[in-house]
Length: 107
Figure 1 (cartoon, rainbow, N blue to C red):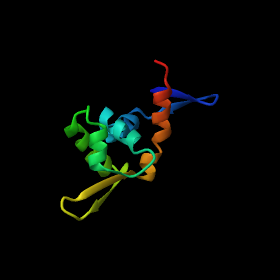
Figure 2: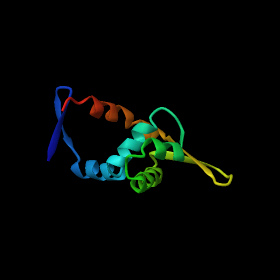
Figure 3: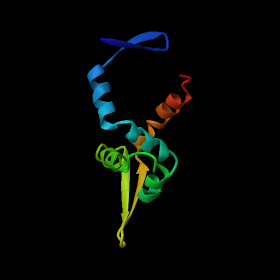
Figure 4: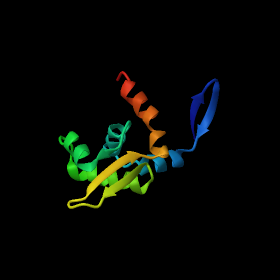
């Protein structure tokens, strides 16, 4: 059993739940996408162009997984070709402070 200190109290961590929840985010690409969308709705083509030095196929898969797992909301403008927009859901927004803490690590 793993434990984490919260305040002055050591509390157990549900390892299976942590592993499951991390799996819902996908991989590092999912975290990049969440960070990219942290403050506004963005069109898919802009997300892909701003993350062009990463594997585009993996970014698209991460977008789909994050929508499926309700971290992102998708909006489609039905024109040709369609414009696809993504934004964080409430659940996705809960992860932004965690990403900020990860960014602030001095390792």
